Image 1 (cartoon, protein in one colour):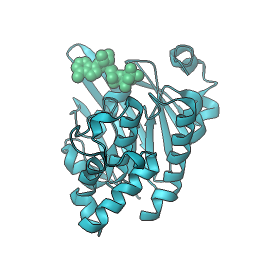
Image 2 (cartoon, helix red, strand yellow; image 1 turned 45 degrees about the vertical axis):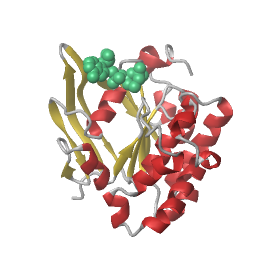
Image 3 (spheres, protein in one colour; image 1 turned 180 degrees about the horizontal axis):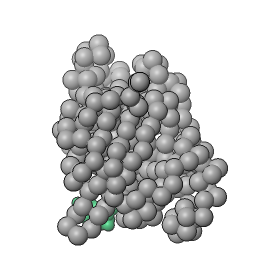
Image 4 (cartoon, helix red, strand yellow; image 1 turned 90 degrees about the vertical axis):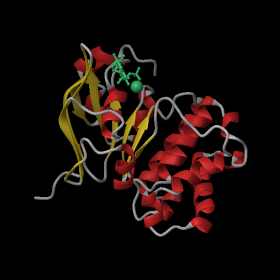
Amino acid sequence: MTPPFFEVENLTKRFGGLTAVNGVSFQIGRDEVVGMIGPNGAGKTTLLRLITGILRPDSGKVRFRGRDITRVKPWTIVNEGIAGTFQVTRPFRRLPIIANVMVACLSPRAMKRGEWVKKIEAKAMDALEFVGISDLALEPASCLSHGDLRRLEIARAIATDPELLLLDEPFSGLNPAETDLLAKSIRRLHKGGRFGRLHSEGPAMIIIEHKLAELMKIVDRVIVLDFGELIADGVPEEIVKDERVIEACIGKVVS
Ligand SMILES: Nc1ncnc2c1ncn2[C@@H]1O[C@H](COP(=O)(O)OP(=O)(O)OP(=O)(O)O)[C@@H](O)[C@H]1O
Ligand SMILES: [Mg+2]
């Protein structure tokens, strides 16, 4: 039997007396885009940090293409083909924006896939164009607004050619028009269009987002966390009607 493309099994993370992620299990198929929602403090970011190897779980497993990557270092996980963006952005502030993305193009994974230095600038520019900040390419990253820093993060993540892309609140700091634009780009990336011309197919995705209306338009499935526990997993139409989900977050979340 083929193992699931991506799988989290019984993952638990405690910070002192607080169980931030509590026995969470789910699977993701190669062709899926999955939203992750839940109230503030539900454990969404912690779960993403466990998947990307930044945090180590107390128990449970993370498997990618059948391989146990539970305690694998973050840079190895990127080379396996999982890349993400973070709620708190951390650019190389003094480097030009294009160089921020070129660094990602220099990841062993991206280099192994046939690119070399002369192609890297073009690829980095392509990633910047994809997120809509190519006109700022030569400015230092410190000049970017909060919203544009998020776009830079996405450009850096997609420049590593991920098969699984993790996005932590990609729409935060963006106005409705910018949100709509980015939402469309994310969907296009998944379908293998535009930036995807460098890829045979776009990446699977996990997208954490509080802007539920926008999220629901671009995901195939939604998982819901509350107090560290997975309380629902289903298609958007079911999730928005689920009593437990409404009580846990939809009522409270600013959409
Ligand atoms: N490094 C840490 N040390 C101690 N507690 C932490 C740490 N990181 C997260 N927590 C706690 O774990 C819980 C889950 O936090 P997390 O950031 O994963 O929530 P979230 O679902 O991403 O929330 P938000 O929607 O506000 O981003 C919170 O109670 C938070 O205070
Ligand atoms: Mg978070």
